[in-house]
Length: 250
Image (cartoon, rainbow, N blue to C red; front, side, top):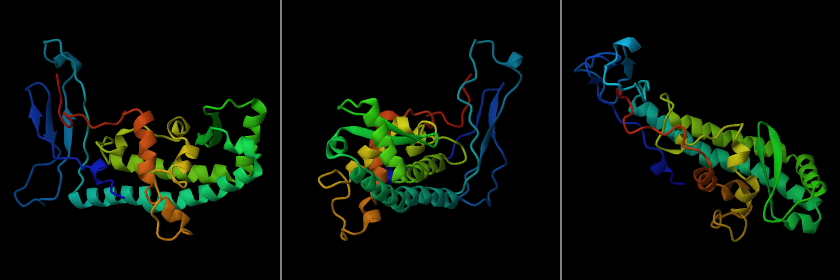
């Protein structure tokens, strides 16, 4: 799976000063310094009473930790692994339990348009274009829980959340997948796991060219792309790296 376009490492930032507030490098740059090292930048401001009288306010202050190119590449390789191999294995377990749950439902209920996900460790069931009665919703939830779908859903959720958080790096911001707010608390609002599984079913958008039909984990090798379809559409970009990252504006 090619997600390199989503995983852009941070560039080195400039030092900035306006006389009253400044951003300086945490340590001086030595001529013999490793060319791969990215110096951190830290904001040093004065008391609020010493700010310029122009009426401006301090905005967008971030601290960027030192991370070498080698460390950044290793971290982003970890993101790719999480969204391919690790997510594939987690998704295979989810599919096994989901298929078992469907078999325990009546054909009419199994074919209705509904979804499921997990938030805060709790399995959730939502109606789609078809209305669900309270009894039908309870029947679906009971079938999913009895088949162990909650555990598979939790593993898929934690894998995706780990990848998103890892992409933010030491600075806590990202221009890649890490810019989206996906957490244990809101995962169910962002990702419909039934929709995710169906996107890999016969005729779906993903997983149609695996060599070994029995390789269920391989079916979800591009699961990261399927997840991104929903994340981009529904999640807030709360951790986007600003264009003036590492600078101070007054």
